[in-house]
Image (cartoon, rainbow, N blue to C red):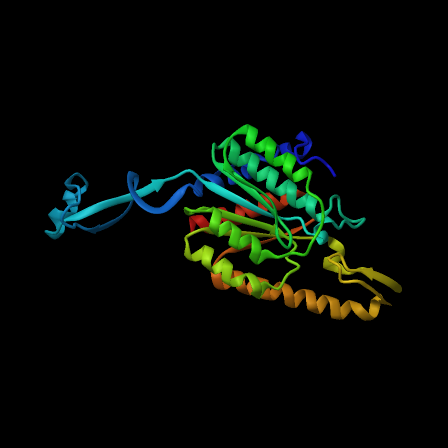
Length: 298
């Protein structure tokens, strides 16, 4: 497997065009804004004065206009904590001839690249490797040594087990005690309804959720023809059939699966980003940063 700490991989983010780098930096800086109200420098809102409030924060101009006491509240700036949940099930190690990397290599490079940006901003990051159970877990820290430890952990991952997203989401909810960002990177070969409730708990707790859906172009396009033997990547067995007869049924099932996943994301108001492994990673991440920054401005 290609090293995710290869400078030629990580530095691709650094070599993005200036506008793209600003999008990346702006996205990460924007995530520092807390949902809690504090007494910093940027005004957020007024609220009525309650006996016991510090009178230093009274807005006397508002009092002059309304003859009522109001407290000025401001945005509280916080350090960002980001937990990456990376799927290392058997299906993630698939690589077709049309893809530059396997799904796992592509996903691990996403995690390493974003962690590198977080490290440069002195933010904390951690990772959970999962399949049908938790394989490895590194808590959130912000040092360079922690980044090196993370990349070594990513490189040593071995395929095995089935994808169980609900397991890792429940583990993330236990580990993240305060409002944070949780990024799940997977091919989501799992029933979306099975992890919708655990995701809802994370949203209710105030966490920001991002799902990166990693997919090989062969899985997306199904370019097979003739008599073909298909091997299940997660112990589903073998299937010998005429590929042309299977194509429509397969693409229909795939589209239904993705529609269900997208519908859950829309209902719970968190992001689902498509990451096909035949698309250059810097282009995919630049597009993602642009969309997120646009939403934050809105």
